[in-house]
Length: 475
Image (cartoon, rainbow, N blue to C red; front, side):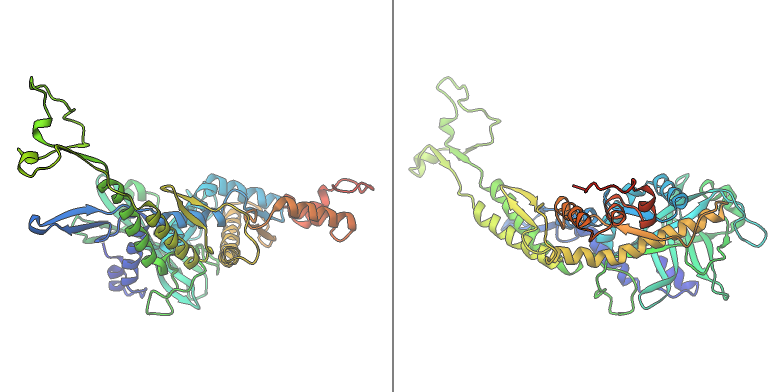
């Protein structure tokens, strides 16, 4: 189904459909199954063509895994100044499996360029004005770029958007379009549309009066007023300029490897050649027919052993050749390893990871695990992406807090939110902690500053948890 075509028919403006074809290309590199590349034809002369499958080192997925693990892992801490509000947000994130899905969608963001987090209230009541009237629980929908359709944007910020959620019920495929749009007074409303998708990809809009007959949509409200000027969605993308779309105002992000696809191609070509080197260069023993059986007709060699190759009849007598000949091809292992390592360095450098991030050694891929310095390419790349992710996580938390109050909680919406990213790969945390202890002993750093930094607390929380002042020195 062409969502762009449907939105255009309904009078909505969104980005060109060609951009979504580019997302499909990025996904094919992520799964190492690129059309007309990983499956190709080889000409065999009079034998015609033969189809071959190109082996892949899978670097499209590997680099996405690595940036996700560096950006959002179990060591990232979200600290909220108000304890009751903090506990509520923590419970919501835990119930929505954010510790797992947060990292997963950082990986997906790396291949598709953009993801979205859409908090909502499940099982709530609506009053006659279309506003939630309490009850329900907070859930989070996770959306990837192929299902995100911006409707209005300014300076790279998406203000209105349509999300597409796919589901199947009783062997019928449905698309739910969730529109987040602005009222004339500047507050947001959320509107739903259900489409039935036929096998011919022709969509059929289902009236809201029939939704109750379809199990996934039986409690779905056609329209909900949020009453808030703040959107109830968060767009998350990599901090990379979109140079793919000719429309320079396109607010969508691009894949981490979008400008390194030529290098991914070169890596897989060389890795495939490396693998073929062992396949084509395996040892063979060519045996004349008369040498295969003994005088009594019993076979001398195992007929299922693939190392032996039977030659034509009377081969050795007719051509005066040896009846048994060993063929042992030389393998170009070192040349292939060097070529692959060169390409891995190019890839690492192009992605902002510096050089020598990856190494192909003895047929396997290894990743550098050493601590990286603050002036390295990797450090600057992580800090650049953390600028966007910091704002994303804070916005997500504030939406959860606001929705928590909608369903009847008494949460503090103007509390301070701090995101502490995992810098253990960037700096030696043990050495830094020891240095901070020395600064506390010298009086350069206060005890509450030390505790707030290393225990993931605010200054106010740290002050309340400090033991009585003594003459002891932190060691």
